[in-house]
Length: 309
Image (cartoon, rainbow, N blue to C red; front, side):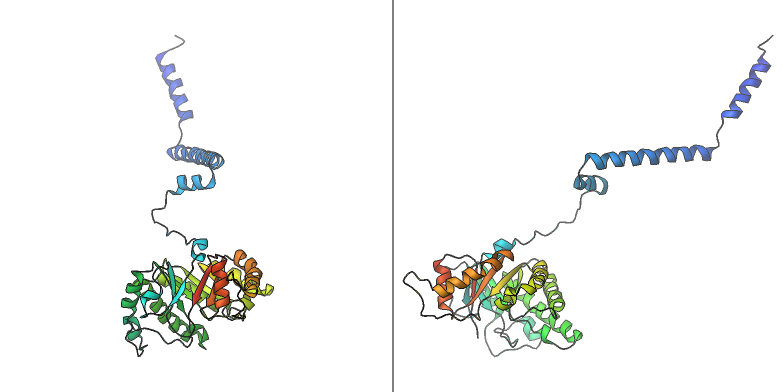
């Protein structure tokens, strides 16, 4: 018989022997196919989806909530009038924002508080920070705290670090009392101190968390075309910048019937480029009546008035 059972079984056995693969080989083939399919699908997804959609699909959504960024234009448009902590509230009733000096140019405080007492910064006053700010907050919704940093004038990095920590604690306490923002004044940015200044601002911002922090820049510094990098670096770490015009001298009697001083109006015109380019607010002193009258008459919405010592 040509097809005997024995021969058929022999042929079948021989065929099985030639097609049998080692288990390791089978696993390797499966892995290779899986890799090829993954690469192909990944490339197709990368083509079909935009970068953000691809990231969400491959990495998943972020569960941690991110704090809403401060809108600089909104912070810039603050017409803040001066007020002294512990003063007569009637002075600012009806105002939407005020600026209060927290310390003097020498660093001494205008108030007393738990943090100030802990740091040994006692003052001869009965003005309580929490009581004063809470009372003011009941009538005025936005309170800008004007602060003159002392840390940057310290000689060594260790002292600067220590004073920065103390000042940050004071500013945090002011915000917890009801303050709305921090304006750092009395600083003169330069190529020599820009790194220390930006580091100081970063530390303050980290301490006060979500509250806006700004820096006042003298007009002479801002108008110098060689300092554009300084302003750009500060603008990158601050929530807002302020153009300090408190040193500008204008004839206070030079105000026409419309309430405008031509000299003051010219200063504002000359500063428009800086105000727009760096989204700045104007800083004026309460003694600069010509500048204030002109700003009010022109219906500007970007100035802050402070009370100098």
